[in-house]
Image (cartoon, rainbow, N blue to C red; front, top):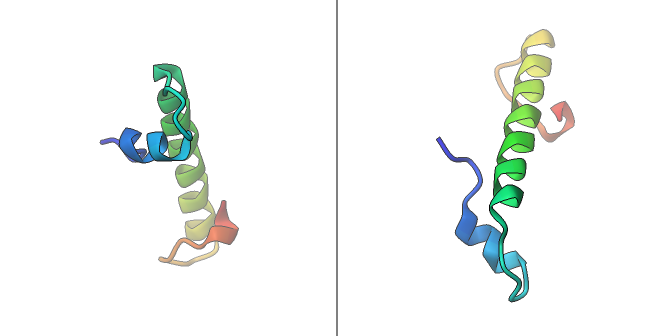
Length: 54
């Protein structure tokens, strides 16, 4: 499942082209960040993930 939406990335690029490797890397880093945040929330006995968990 894709978390990062390519069309939303393009909107931020101010007319520049989007390279495939950028969207892949953003997807990878987002997935990694979310996994760490989930682990931290669980370790703290919470069922809610907050920005501070990242």
